[in-house]
Each structure stands twice: as structure tokens, then as C-alpha cells.
Image (cartoon, rainbow, N blue to C red; front, top):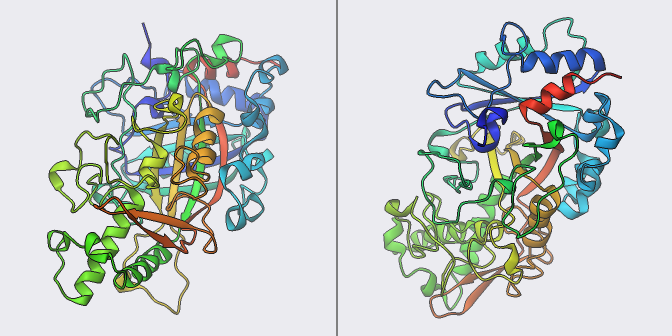
Length: 470
């Protein structure tokens, strides 16, 4: 019988009822005190260190949620035996900065340009996450976790985010991409999106995967590795102004294109008038929808390529037949579902649990002051899976930045998340006739400002780490 109570709660269950999140980035200062802190975090007493939120909180939602992730350097600082450390996968051991080229972290997003504390990755040992309804609750939990005089850790830095109303994110899309549903896990609030349920081994060590005969190695002892998983924590800066300016430019270029009427066949349906400015406004939204694979209200292009339809925002869909969702669209590249791709064995095998929240103020073009620099905006993202290499890194490299899943997009980058260069970037808009219009000169809209690979241990593993002697 699978025990949800042994899992950290942010793995299989999201905290959508907690709009605020704060990340505490910690270095182990006193290993003995740090191990006692870990023991206290799963003691059940709740009178000191905040208690780790498990995956089974019953009918009563906790007021706040508290979880931890450990880097390889953090496990080593706590005194994890070398025989255990040697069993962790190479990408986790090396850490995110060493994998930069594979992840597309180049140019502005290269690790040498990351601000503190991410410029000293070997000092990052724990990343603690606090989720709450109010900022005051974040402060209270942080004070309990790291009271004055706390000897266990040094606080290297924090990152904080807050969800926007209606699940909207900085580029103006409604962010409703579905999380995997897992075999044997009943979650009545997660609707069926038409994709097959994922085996628990997709996200948890020690369980079967959807690749026959393959399970990921569990670091020993089992008390440490079983029911654990890995997380790619990413601070992703988003150039919202640059994105909107690119839509302006693309619309102005397209309005002169001889096949523009094939794109504008439904402009009246998306609230535009048949004036030049109305056509340009319609084209902006058409380009935005194609780049993402969804209209900004969340309607998938696979179901409604001509106009958004609020009745289809949460409908089941797949990429079959003559789907007019572009092969290079962001959501299709990240998750090809059951669509035909070159690496057929990879369908549904690179699925990730994705948690993310915006940081920085929402963009309001009416309040933009061109004489002042824009405040930094972006996403605090967590990409959780049993194999960083076969899931997160393979998706990032093969699908987002090389386009190896389909020869029609090979050599191009993901239009939203990819490492685009205006000199070489391109994206094809599909037409009803079967042809395409090629957009060029896409700039990079998102780049990394920090991150770390962490291991999300089970509650049993936290107890084990707390009991280590050195």
C-alpha cells in the first residue's frame, strides 16, 4: 500500500490554495545542529521548527506548507556516507551550473551572470519552500525556521513569488497546462486531460516506470532513496516588454504578407474590427497563440485554431491527424502527448511535475515609464521527476533547444523558453492550406537567473539524515 504521508506534499499535490511562496536558500553552518533541525522538522511536535508538510493532510488544509530540497553538496555537508553519495546520478552530483550548455543557459543566462547566491553553487545546501495565503505567514514561518541565534544554517538569500488572479502569468497566458495524473493516486480535483496516467516511477524512486523493465537507481539505504525524487529549481527571468514588442513587429510584418488572409479568417471572432489597426491587433494574438500553442485564455490550438473558446479551456486534446497546433509551439515541444515524434519511445516518458509562480509585478503597458528600467519579472519554477537526465535535461536539450522530435522543427529553438538568437531563429505559422509562413528574428524572451538541482527526500529519509553520526 502506497503511503502518501511519507511523501513531501509538494510532489504529487500542488498548493494552489497558497498564492504566496518564499524560497530560503541555506548553507549548512553546523552539521550536528542541521541534523537536529531535520529531526525536529518531522518530529510531529510542531512547537519549534516548522513541520514538513506531507502529501496526506486529510480534509483540513494546513494554514502554511513547508518543504525542503537538498543539493548534493548539502547531502555531503550533512554527513551522508560516501557509499550512498556515489549512487546518486551524475547530473545531480555535478549540479545545474555544470550542465548549463545542455540546458541552454548561455549568453545572458549563463551561470557566470547569475546573481548571488547562485554565483556560489557549492555553498547552496538546502532550499526551503514556504507556501502561505499571506505574506505575514511567510514571515512567521521563516522566523520559526531560522530564529535569531540559529546555529544550523546560514541564510544565503531568498526568492519570493505570488500567483496572479485566474492563473495568469507574465506573458498574459492563462497557465493551465495539466500536471500528470498518477496511477493509484486519487485526486478528485484534477480533471482528466486525456493523457494516460503516469506510473509512480515517473516521479518517485523505487517504483515502476512506463519504460518496460526500467527503474531508476535508488540510492541506498532504502530509507534514504526510496520515495525520493529530484527537482530542477529555476529562476527564469521573462522579458515581457520584449515579448509584446515582438508581437507588434511580427504583426506589422505579417499584415503585408500575401497569405495574411489565411491567418485572419477569424479575426471577427477574436474581437477585432476590419481596420488596419484591428487586423494588426488580431495578428498579434494569432502570433501569441501559435508561439505558445494556446490562446491567451488557455484554449488549446489543437481544438480551436481560429479563435479562443472558453468552453474548451479545460477540454481533452491530443496532437493527431492534421492538428493546426504548430509543431514548434511551446506546449507541444514540452509535452508532445500522443503526437507522432521521432523518438516514439519518449512519448509520455519525459513528463514532469511542474510547480511555478510568478515573481515581480504584473506588466501594465499603461503604466510603463520608458525613462525608468523595467523591474525584473519572471517565474520561480520547479520541475520534478525521478530522473533529471532522462526527463528535465532531455526535454530541455532535445525538444526545447534542438527540436529533435520532429524534422520540421529541427534546428529551431522553443519560441518562448528556447535560447533564441535573432540572427538564426525562426518559427513556422501553419495555414489551413497546409503551407506555412515563417517568422524570423525571434529574440530570447526567457533566460535563467539562478537555480539548483535538489533531491526531495521522503519524510523517512529526512529522519534518516537527521540520525546520521559523523
